[in-house]
Image (cartoon, rainbow, N blue to C red; front, side, top):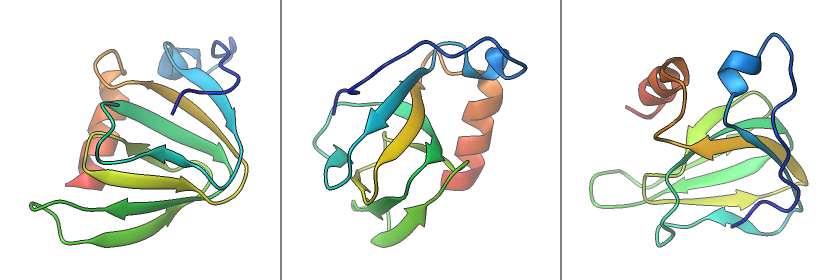
Length: 109
C-alpha cells in the first residue's frame, strides 16, 4: 500500500537511523501489506496499532499486535492491518541501516 503523505526524516539525533525512511500517515481499516504484495520493507511504528497475521508453510500461524516503537518487516508472508490511524517510518529493506536490520532479524527469528 503506498504511503498517503510521505516526508523525509527530520534532522535530529535519530537522523542516521532514519536516513532513507519515509514518514507515512495512514487511516485505519486498511491492509498495509499482504502475503501477495511485493513489498520488502522495514517499518517503525510511531503511533497507532497494527494487527499482524504471520502465515506460510515455514511459520506457525501467528497473530500479534504492534504498538508505538515496534519495528517489523513486510518480507515474510504477512497480513498487516491498520487497526487505528497510524503514523510510521518505512524504508526498503536493502538500504535499511544495518543496526535496524539486526534488531528486526532478532525479533523475527
